[in-house]
Image (cartoon, rainbow, N blue to C red):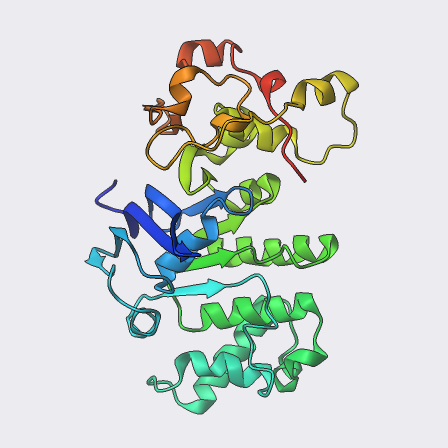
Length: 335
């Protein structure tokens, strides 16, 4: 991890209790985010990506590991404390309606981000007007209540509110998944523009690999709380190296998919139970190239020349580049 990183997550582990049983939400996850860098977290439901985002925000307690922000260990700090710190972290959530106070005009909700600060009221609302303009909203909308706005308008309000306190890092947790496709593109472009303009660092969480690639410089692929692959966004999306990442790419909606590809992408789930945490590869029951050691041994982590990591017993870098492990082996994911 770089000494220049703005955010460092090291050996992050989060456990839950369900029905009296211990369930690992995230297991030994390590990564960093540099100033101005956009890191994407992608995976299916239950992969742990949202749990990681909530841990960064201080919304869930850690069972192990550390989180460092701007050189300061914030592992034990709660959400309220982190929000009050200079250069703090902000969030944009999936449902903008639930994150806005329905009883307040949206302008007041945005202004509350700097309540108690040094700005006088006139300066605060001048800043709101500027932010609204930058996210493509008329200032007159500040007097509206959330219920009167569309989903796209509410999400733009959420973006403006997140930017109000001038944070250095924004956690975007599925910020467009609840929006129509046409509106998604508009909101994503607003986010990209504001990030470039302000040199913001972002953690973009999503299940759509194409969207995550569009919003990220670096992509981390998660499955059952573990990192299976990461690397430059273009590499992960175009030449995936882990069988699970290949499955994500192969399962993405396409205009035309040949019958051969569809047949090759289908694989029956192995009847054996999932490996227990720390004892094997979590993807073993669904992997098309599974071997005996995948069930009993934690996979080694290969580090490529581009800095990307691949956790797989059967990954051979030279063979993979020559096409020995290719998309034709990718299993089809459940919809």
